Length: 184
Image (cartoon, rainbow, N blue to C red; front, side, top):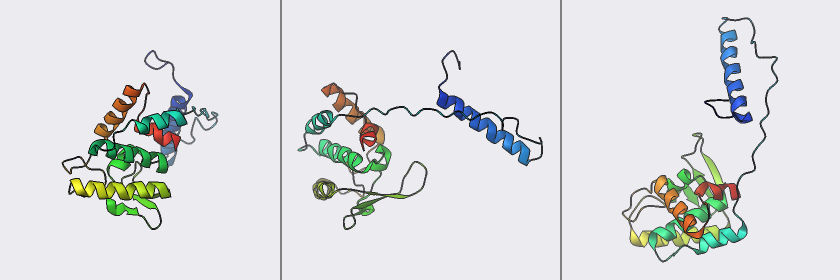
């Protein structure tokens, strides 16, 4: 137990990996001759089944947005993009229109979790939705961001997540943006 809580296999595997790296460092620095945990069998944690939304729950969620309102339309497009491409919420909030290539239906994701840029690809239907969103956004605010606030500033990921959680709670669902990434 760790602080009177049971330790998962994943946590034990992380501890084991970190200890092994430390001892490998000591071997490399010639502080010790061999790694004392080389003979200990590596724990292979079981992957947990990720929570997913059913098709009916997805329809219920998307139909709950009033897309005549700027902020709800923005959130609707963002969630559809996450579901279509597997983007993280932070990556989605930081997108710029110039990151989108409609010819190849690709988005260059620059602000990734690991710092490595990558391309994600979107469907023809998402292409239509994105073009409509950009035209709509440009009529209401002058902003360099793809998904700005009504004032044109960058949408904070916490505000986006709060909006999605609140929308889900009103529907009786436990929803957050990463859940749609899981569905992707």
